[in-house]
Image (cartoon, rainbow, N blue to C red; front, side):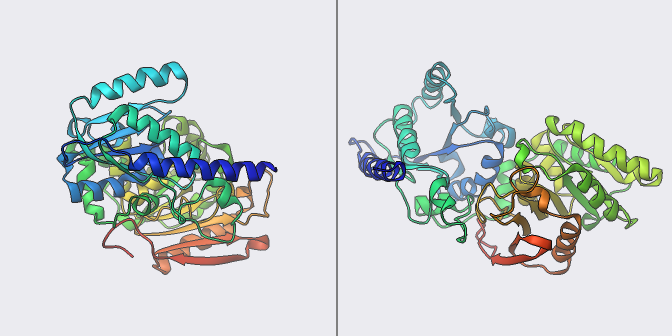
Length: 411
């Protein structure tokens, strides 16, 4: 039997086990409370917010708790105000950490009785992975609640399945939880802003940082740039970002706002130093916010920007939530349609085709400066919902358009 056949048999077995385990319930008094489960990094959690907002809108915010499964710490509290939500976390990094965090999670949720558990599934979740998560959740929340979202769904494919269907658009990660749990999106962008509940002080800190004492620019004149990424495969060459920035600064009304976290600040500073050396006059139109604002303040700052241009990463999804038009540069490690920021008002995603390798191995360096500038012009001139340009040799590309949105009033 081949390795592939073994995997298929294993997936089938775990799928059967999930279907049976999710339906098992001990008798109990029906409760209105809902426990939402998300396995998450910071960017993943940002993508999950429209689903959370929908659940809160339908079930009542006071009736929704969160169980976060994360190796990256409590990313939920970087986005949400902890005093408004009960957030438990399990860290599966190693057995000692897992057991300690499991006990803490049970303590956090102690006394809560849930009528349902909703698992915010992702396309990359294999059947074995979902089964482990279901077992973990049952240890924390008990056997009484009905569990949804764990069972396999034909529209939500594993990473291995997606790798074999390069020509087919995947179910976007923002839509996967709705499909897995049989829910219809009911939230608007405004509902997500209410969920975030960014304070006046946070908005003021963001505005001070982005204006640097100068008069605020019109939103369309302010462009956000994210020039780094946690994963090296996702980094478009820095010198090309500098070239794009120079072209944008040729418009005297344009202001550039560089965003990111503390790990992005040094690389971002290199780009800004090169731009400042080119033109002293342009310095006051360039600001480096990478690492100087909290996550919530960064989202507030992005609400002052009309356009975001950057690598695949959490800032792209923050910009989408903030209502920016989003141009994202991808490598070809993931298939098209999976991580595009469809929470944005409009987006255009550039992707090298699957055959493009490039110097870095995943093709992102095959995207040219001219193509990125053309994409910026296209975003500004042609307001369409969400587009993917799959790029081949000599900047030839094929375009796909999707109207999917995790918001009830979009699309």
